[in-house]
Length: 160
Image (tube, rainbow, N blue to C red; front, side):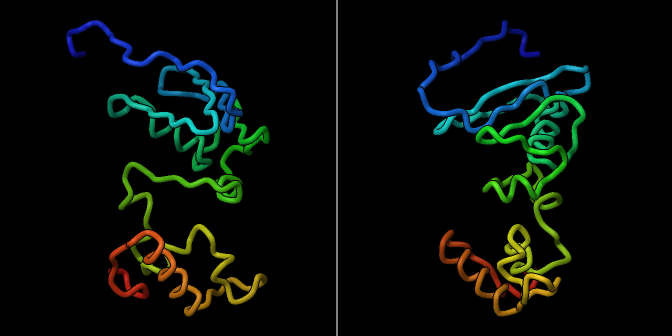
């Protein structure tokens, strides 16, 4: 597309001896029936790049569990992650930051405090068996996030 030959800027690094943390095998990738496999070792960062529509966001949604898959496998610390199960990833300590955070990362009809608590509702529930949340626990969680991450926000109980 650029009119130049492809240039690979980085070679695959030598194995560091660090354990494989995330193993992805034969997941569907793009619209052409391709599959992708990769390993991420402790301490490594994987960067994906490509043109819009190349499939990188779709691949990450599969890895995150937001989209199910019928081929391949995803393994975290040697354990199989079930397709289409975001909860498995959250329980394992995972997090996902979507490309379009306004539309895919927020529930705009909910308050700031509710959005901050959505990944760990158990921490703000009145009781484990009840679906209702505690307003004071929501406020406390929002304040924890504000302090820990130096977040500037309006009132946590509003959407602004």
